[in-house]
Length: 321
Image (cartoon, rainbow, N blue to C red; front, side, top):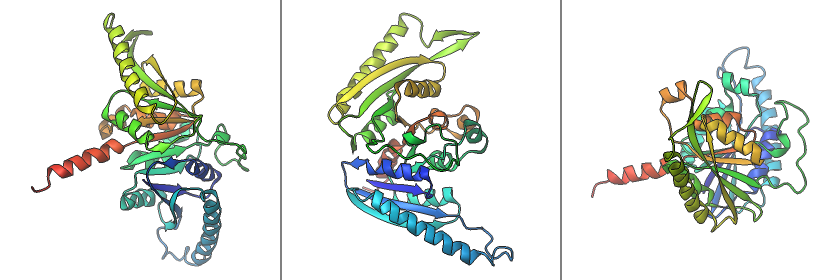
C-alpha cells in the first residue's frame, strides 16, 4: 500500500496527519510525506535574486521543523515513512510524484474554502482530486468543521479523538463503487466504526413535482434491486467491519442526496467511486464526485482503484504470448 501524504505545514495538514496515523492498512504500508515549497518560476529575475537565498533558507528551516513534528505524529505507523521536499507548483509536484511512486492513495488536508471560492477559483485539493490517476482522500478534520479558511489559531483536537466513527459509502453497483468497497476493506478500522451503505435512486423534477425513475410497479422493483445489492455489500463488509447498515434515498441530484445523507447521519467520511466522466460531461453537468468533494462538510475519499485494475487487464491483453 503506497500512500502519498501531501502537506503544507498548516493546521489542515496537521489534521490530515492525525487521520493518516489512524489508517491501519492490512498490507505493508509505504508512506511518503511530501512538502512542496513555493519558488518563483522566474528565479533569474533581478527583482527575485536578492531575496531568493534567504527565502529558501527560511523555507527549509520551517519544513525541517514541520517534518520533525510529523515524525512524532506518525511514529505509530506500521510501515516505512519517508519525508521529501519539492519546489514549484504544488498541484503539479504532487501529481507527478504520485505517478512516479505508483501511489495507491493521495492524502491531503482541505483548506476549508467557502463553496463560492471553490466553485469560482478551485483549490489545491480540488485540482489534485480531479486530475490524479489514483484514489484521493481529502481530509476535513472534525475540529475544523465550520472554521473559516485562514483562521488562526486552529482549534485543538479532542484528546480522545478518533477521526472516523461514521462512514458513508455511496454504492450503485457500478465497477467503481465495487472497487470502493474493496479499497475500504484494505484497511483495519476501529471496532466502533459504523458504515452506512447509501444508494440513491434518481428522480426527475418536472414543474415542481417529482416523478420516480420508474412508475409503479417498476419503482418497487427498483427498490428491491437496490436492497439486494446493499445486502451483498453488507455481507462482504461484515467480515472486517461489524457495524454495517444500508440506506436508500430518492433524489433528483445524486451528489446532493449523498451530501445531505452524510450531514443527517453526522458522518465523518464519505467514500465513493469515480466513474471518470468525460471532459464535456464535467464542464456541462459536473460529476457526482466533484459535487460531493466541493459541497461535503466531512472528509471525502474518491476511489479510483478500478481504473488501475482495468489498466492492468488492458496491459495483459497486449502482452505477446
